[in-house]
Image 1 (tube, rainbow, N blue to C red):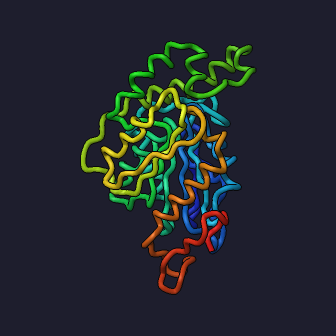
Image 2: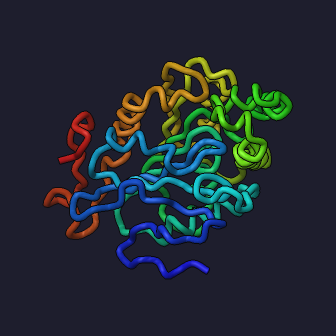
Image 3: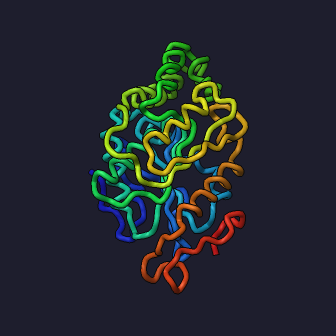
Length: 294
């Protein structure tokens, strides 16, 4: 059973290990907090994947990353493979953590699908959507690109897995149990991704941002742009040097682009009463290159 959460709107850190939740990599602190950024890691990864981005994001952004069962400190717990159920759980976490400030959602690879499903569930639950939905290195559910290439990954052994996820830890090749513990969350997340149905209902009405690797062997720029088919606010894909695992090779550049898109998404947003902002109630935008909005 989960212990009661705090009342200040921060995300709980004491959720049972067998339940998905958000870990506060940089919690909201005092009056400087403006926006909460929810980050969904790629398949098989855990919340610390986004730790490297913290120094390059504005201090006014609190960063909360998804921790799923079966990985990190939760290694060995049963994994989740039902995309809709997972989206419902995460949407509820976002609703519980709402403190009236704007929020954004960012996902990479399979994390993009989780981000998309979470935002859909948020809106179905009647809650306000994020100001920005940023999706990286993944095809939209209706696009055949990922589905067509998934068998090569699933049947390609270690080489196929590393093509999508990057190099596996060296120790995993010598310790069968370590290899199994590494593969289980990766394969579970692949199974989750392959079960996403095509989008149904009206287009998503929230600002969209699309990022990808210029030499991604799994997701083409055309597949990435397919998200525009189900969005009411289309976006031009931004490509960075590298393959499917490009983010960790472009941390500063990707953080800068994400910050710029967050700033754009906040135009017209009115901050909560007594929150940071101008006398007119507008949220401060400032210069995104300064890593903080003033």
